[in-house]
Amino acid sequence: MRIVVVDGRDRDVFARFFQVREAVRRAELAYPVGMGLEEARVLMAGTHSDVRADGLGLVDGDRWVGIAWLDWWLRDNTRTVDVEIAVDREYRRRGVATRLLEAVIERAQAEGREVLSGFDLTGDPVTGDSAGTAFAAARGFDRKHAELHQVLELPVPDEQLGFQPVTGYELVQWREHAPEEWLEQFADLLSWMSEDVPHGDRTVEATRWTPGLVREAEARRIAQGRFTYTTAAVHTASGELAAYTQMGGTPESPGRLNQYDTYVRRSHRGNRLGLAVKAPNLRAIQADRPQPAALHTWNAPENGPMIAVNHRLGFRPVAQRTLWELRIGNNT
Image (cartoon, rainbow, N blue to C red; front, side, top):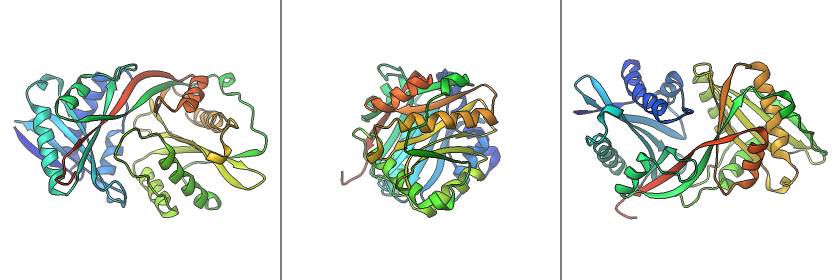
């Protein structure tokens, strides 16, 4: 078997690489998640200020038997590299995952990274346990965080989305680009979201968003073929952007939609703004895209208020995603 480096620029090579990951997710998840082929390739092949993505494939003759997807953070979390390992089910228990992990650690150490971080997506909804978590624990990874994977089947009946507006706030909506009048405040909310979202014991630095970084992220989504729906709440007395939610997907995977973020500024919590922004955002996406789809979201178990909002909208738990870390640096 040989290791192949993948950077997304060779479409045929990337397709072979991607097919392994997608096949594993479809086999192991009742509700598969993740980017479509071209969406993922554009991310890997592009040049971005915040992240570089590439991968490794393990090839047996002409057959791709396992892959490792790597995210190298460039603006923050520069000590960490994120990895996802997927192995063809026919090649399990043959050392494929171990060989890929060894190659990833060697590369990460060569680039001065100190922490290897990875999600397991397939855990039991209650315990979080899976074959992937057993592998991680056996290789010395420590479990650092858990998130409940919840799914809402669309379309949702209109009466299920008929929540009353909140007095003292008005709603604004946009699609692919944040309006200039809200751009600076929106970047500020994104930064607070990164700061406040539960991280467990993860080794993580909050992302400091700027208007330029927001525009870069928007341009990347468009290049990937993604669409995004945003609903925000504005405090009418102060003009302050108080809350927002974002959902989206890609025509490449029409049955797979994602709840990206929902955040309420600390000073405006307790006013039911989570429901106030999510319900109309759902109405907007359903009006444009009425075909059946699964809307995916993840929340830490300790984030009770947001899980309660999701429950009211009809989300149900289907799995538990756990995050694991391995210290690989010489100075840790």
